[in-house]
Length: 240
Image 1 (cartoon, one colour):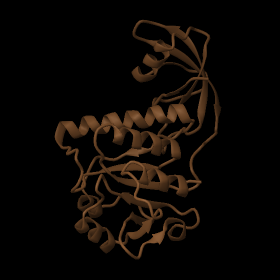
Image 2 (cartoon, rainbow, N blue to C red; image 1 turned 90 degrees about the vertical axis):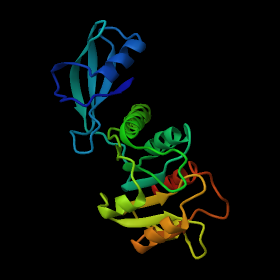
Image 3 (cartoon, rainbow, N blue to C red; image 1 turned 30 degrees about the vertical axis):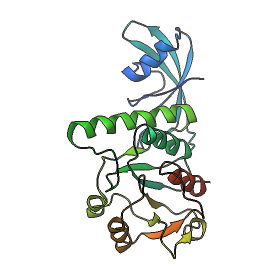
């Protein structure tokens, strides 16, 4: 059954106008009145779960649906992992956001690292953030998640450390000598922050800053993975 993100009040029995994004998708699928769909609110602190719904009207610019039974089902990971990911070039960041969402990441902070090829600020940064949030929404619709991960504004590591939005264990993906294997450094199911760099990795200055603020260096093994692959490999190991 098609699933759509619907960040508006959802009450069984109500008839609502679907928000533009969901309405457009219903129209693209050429659905008709009487067709069944699934709606989810998506916010971290919202009602959760998902709702049965039925399309009641298909207009040129408006789609109406009647809300049905609520199902308190969640498909979240057993631990909250917050990803600080160095911004990668071209569409690789889109791919990283999509796959991290599918794997169950709790939030993503695009990191303006010294070696990031893509530099963002002002209106361009706002547009990119909105685009990445839409990528995460689409991934949730596809994979069955009812909670859309938060996409924080792009920022430098120094700025993030001024007021880190997440508590918990901090891990840094590093090629330095003396790193621990990821599975040994992050046992159990406690929440954590995972920091990974862009192409070329974090600079020595950035790594020193992270280590000075409680990040423990970890490794994924002897091979050097691409910037968009490494954090996904870590998430796959952490979010089992």
